[in-house]
Amino acid sequence: MAQNFLSCDREQVLLLPPDLSEWLPAGHLARFVIETVDQLDLSEVYGYYRQDGHGRPAHDPAMMVALVLYGYAIGVTSSRAIERRCVDDVAFRVITANRQPDHATIARFLLRHREALQGLFFEVLGLCQRAGMVRVGTVAVDSTKLAANASADQNRTYEGLRREAERIIEEAIETDRREDELYGDKRGDELPEELADPGTRKARIRELLEQARREREQIEAERAAVQARHDEHLARTGKRLAARPPRQTPSKQQLRVLERRKYNLTDPDSRIVRHRGMLMQGYNVQTVVADGQIILSARATASPVDQGQLEPAIEHARANLARVGIDTPIEEVLADSGYWSLRQIMDLQQRHARVLVPPITGNAKTPEGLHPTARSMLRSLDTEDGKAAYQRRQAIVEPVYAHIKHNRGITRLLRRGKAAVQAEINLIATTHNLLKLRTALQAA
Image: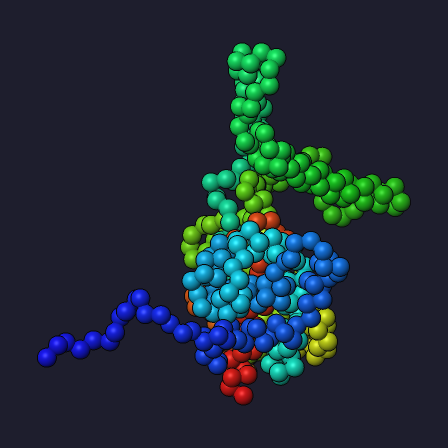
């Protein structure tokens, strides 16, 4: 008796279903994305294109939006990877109706409609609110580091930038000399790309040198403003201010900071940040998450530390809530000790918000040596209610990062420059909320 196997005839002619949607099961994520995009206001995207129908036809904007959202939802963020999926992946082919936009078209769409795509965050947040998922009584603030699309090897100090600029100038002079010897008065095309293209390395170095110069001028302006305040007080009262008078020149510490300050030639807005004990070129993403793991705010910052970021994060979340018509006040803020800032915590408390942040005790040996606000915070965190409330921080915010970085595999940003990076982070946050909305609707 012959062996029994399932047939594997690659020459068999198939009668595929004529309806592309039949290629996917009923509850597939791609179906949900398509149906959700149909509910979104895409008038700003459609408004970009000509109304008279002339010119080369463009891909349907609703299809392109669904394509981008689905790609980000499953962790496919590269335009080239999305292009490949439009050939290899059934779900992508269903979304595009078997169209195959190339990576350049996808990248241009993301750039051209950056503002409109960022607005989708509010559209999806509004859908979550109507589904009863946005509970803002308690919010948790935390940060994560995402690698930038830049190499740490491209960092330069101010002096390094000057040397690089001098090298390029010397190279240009030497190139001109060689061309004169080779061509005489004739035109040659031997200039290296970085010198021929003003939008690349040479222009970037010039921009960074100008930024460094402005930082030095800002320090001098701040010193001059303090000096003017001292002079005005002395002229008005005849007495010197009790505060220490400003230095005539920047302090040694300020000079050290300026000397050590590094500028990245690839992405000047990125910074060296510490992540899991290692240093990497990246961004520090500040996120405010509501109870239920809905992202209310996600901001890219250049600060490598979290201190000083608590109040801006909460204010940004409040503005986002107001934009979608949610007027419920934030009553409780949870954050780890890295966010401890006495002034910001006192400001939030004055706005009738309960703040639970473990204080940084510094050199204080006993609670009695701390500021009264810090002592009060320690007492609150030591109560049963305080312990239970603070433990919720971990359950609210940390699964969000686990889902984005582990489940979806998004650990690196692909765009450069803070504005473009912020747009990318907004898409990541938008699709996170979209996935939470799908889970909630399936459970209903």
